[in-house]
Amino acid sequence: MSAEPDSSARPGPSAGPGSGRHVLILGGTTEARRLAEALAADPACRVTTSLAGRVTAPVLPPGATRIGGFGGPAGLAGWLLAHDVTHVVDATHPFAERMSFNAAEAAALSGIPLLALRRPGWTPGPGDSWTFADSLAGAAELLPALGRRAFLTTGRMGLHAFAHLTGTWFLVRSVDPPDGQVPPQLEAVLARGPFTLEDERELLARHRIDVLVTKDSGGSATAPKLTAAREAGIPVLVVRRPPVPEGVAETGSVEAVRDWLRPPG
Ligand code: NAP
Image 1 (cartoon, rainbow, N blue to C red):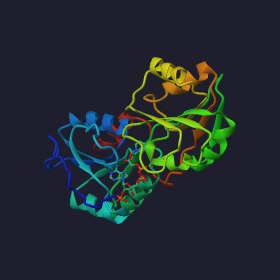
Image 2: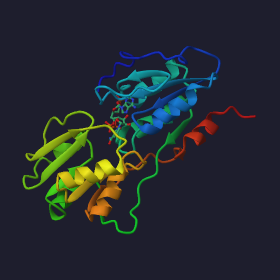
Image 3: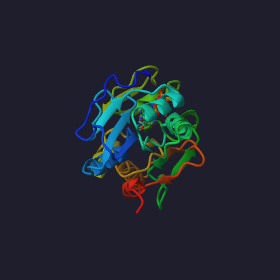
Image 4: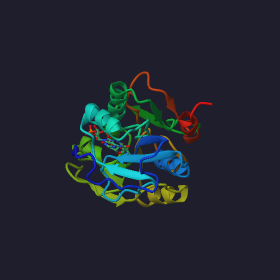
């Protein structure tokens, strides 16, 4: 990832310097976009959303945006200070393992307050048949015993973990096409959530899927696949979330972030 900080910065209507708060949202999720939308109407608040640049045509939120890595925690801390950021919200995906730790370290280095906006994980209900794995590699070990036609929704970045599974047929759904090392028997479907229950039912039936593989991403946008799997009696292989940095305040709601941003008094 390039450390060019502002090569594709897009100034937004609320991005000019002002006397109020400047909030940096570390984004790439539905929650980050919802937060940017919620803050866009607040004239006392400038918002910049930062995206990693993994998706070729991202849906850009209101406010300013910048795309690309910061060059590690020190780079991020420098960016925060250089751009008069007053608050940082880590709204990255629960499986963005490194960025949350970078944000915690940058907040400590710069003294700028940080709050994590993280959607709760999913939990199995009656009728669900879920098996848990600690990593994509762990999921690849367990998969052959669970099914032969897998719907793999763990993202195109981790496909290499399944590349050695020659006996499994994969339906892979991702925003951009898979590349790099991929399993030999693979069909790709390019799509961006949210997905409906009807669509998910149809997809599972059409491709005769007998096992679903997912990260514990949480949220409602991609949850219908879990309901469709339960209805069809299909087992689900769930990759557990990676650890998060200790001591960082966390919330699951955009409204709570707005409360946190409100000046005291
Ligand atoms: P990661 O492993 O945590 O981050 C790797 C590096 O990418 C970071 O060290 C940082 O580079 C850069 N980066 C990550 N998020 C960034 C952001 N919001 N703005 C600027 N730079 C960022 O993350 P990842 O798993 O590759 O995910 C990349 C992005 O995709 C995240 O923003 C995440 O919200 C989104 N996403 C991830 C997943 C997933 O399953 N992992 C799913 C959906 C969306 P520097 O160290 O150079 O700053």
